Image 1 (spheres, protein in one colour):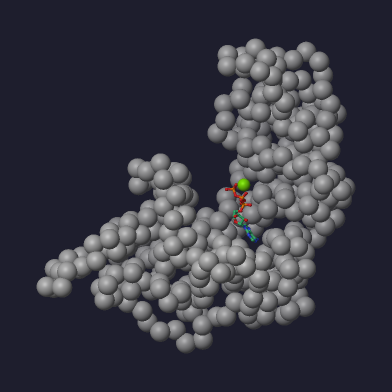
Image 2 (cartoon, protein in one colour; image 1 turned 135 degrees about the vertical axis):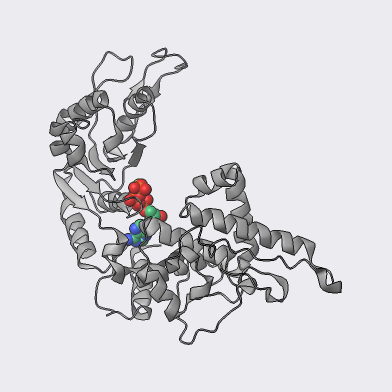
Length: 391
Ligand SMILES: Nc1ncnc2c1ncn2[C@@H]1O[C@H](COP(=O)(O)OP(=O)(O)OP(=O)(O)O)[C@@H](O)[C@H]1O
Ligand SMILES: [Mg+2]
């Protein structure tokens, strides 16, 4: 999508979400109208061209990576690469080689030499994600690159140089980590030349309708899925929920609704997972299971459709518990992550409207449903005859 298409889509969504079309509602793919988001857009506009180091903080799923991408895309380096490095959950030796490269024979398994991400990002931007998880040994090496752009590869003797702009992100409280001596104070101040704190979604609830409209529109236009709408009552529930997983949780929930949700393509309060209504697991209201409709009633059932719908419900429940984290959902289901992804892809494709998928660039307004009609949850789950199931 080019800038003009994006502006048009945002304007359309803005109109439907009841806002003022003149008001800026997004910036470089980041949707937000709340004053704190507007302030972030202004900081990005100002720092992007400068090349200074930026530290992006905020809870998981708030959009830190999106901010890093915006900084890069709005900078003079945009024609060069934006290279991400995930600093968490990687053993120290591997991360060092990942960042700075290694020479052949530097360690067991290093059968060839390899260029590191700093070199790869030369002239561009490096995005150090989860920088708070980096070991203190690597923190020293990072500080040196930040100071003078110099580093050595693992097992290498010559000093290398790279012209790289650094954007770092973390969901840890680095001040606390500094106080606990887990994070170097000098590096902390070197990274947070310009700090950007992305607020949690619950602190900017007015952005929720805008984000809902944006994601539903994207699922329709970019993935060719049916166009879903949200009843005003369901929107109230979405706006009131705490969103511990922030924008990622909202995005994943909407995708789940569109792929596994009601056939009439309307999201109503009763089609939303129980956790959104403030009910907790274990109170008997969350499992969604009651007596199955297998009395056959003399007519028999559509076996494959029934199995598919059971699978839908099990997957939806696992995604619900994992807050949309597909890796965690796969673990709960004891499935390979790829198996789950394939299942979801297949379900998505079976719902996609081919003509729309082909015309993915077209963007239209998002209608909100004025008068919601109650729909049996059984229907939502695709059960024959709308068999009753409690949500
Ligand atoms: N304001 C926003 N507008 C549109 N999409 C957003 C916004 N914020 C987040 N997203 C989307 O939500 C998802 C999560 O965002 P992102 O990966 O940037 O979060 P994060 O803060 O880096 O999370 P983590 O700490 O878990 O790495 C992405 O798919 C991103 O595109
Ligand atoms: Mg991230």
